[in-house]
Image 1 (cartoon, rainbow, N blue to C red):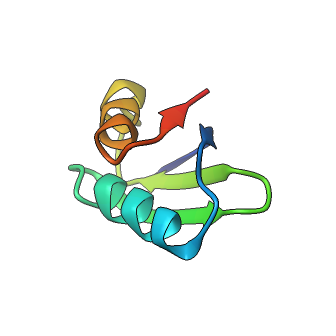
Image 2: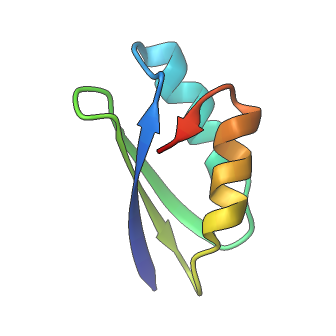
Length: 67
């Protein structure tokens, strides 16, 4: 089990939080997603090796940006 924290730009409301959480949760191997709107940090828990590229792509598709 591994955990990574990403800085995500552009999130400002609960709708944003939901979109990002939903997009990342669909990725294979993701077991948890926690979004902190105040800091813009998204903490992702993986059952195996983290795939940063897939997380970036999921966040991009949701309309936000990992910085």
